[in-house]
Image 1: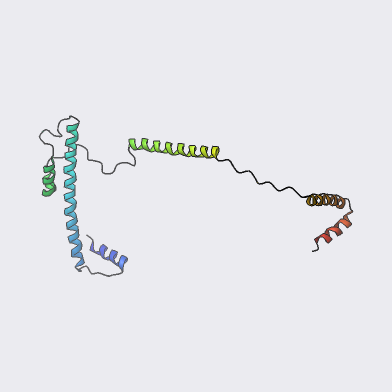
Image 2 (image 1 turned 90 degrees about the vertical axis):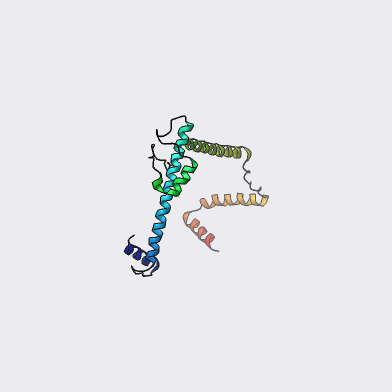
Length: 182
């Protein structure tokens, strides 16, 4: 435990200055001791449980026990080892340790993941195909028929446009200027 590092960390986080002789450091030391003891107990429990699991798996597979002179661990043995501490576990572990952090996916999980992705894609395709087959787009709205007056105005406008096109440039320019006025 680096007291100077802890002092600077407390000051950075809270702005409170503490002295190296402050009683808080006694609590930190006590916390470390309690934590170390708890970790040792948990390591002993995990080690005993992994030994028991190894023995049970070897027995289930029909193999010989792990060691010639080492009997398989039982539930009372695990409890006794946990209460006695890590020194009570005498026989060494004869197989590789149990992996505590497996990879991202196991092989069986990858197959399930691929199947789920396939079902999702198939569902999306079926939904889109059903929508395309069952829902027809609404027809585009059509413009209403022109009245006789509107049709006549269009004809007159077209004739006027042809007549303006035949005028000389000066007269056409004057006519355009007059049409621009409000």
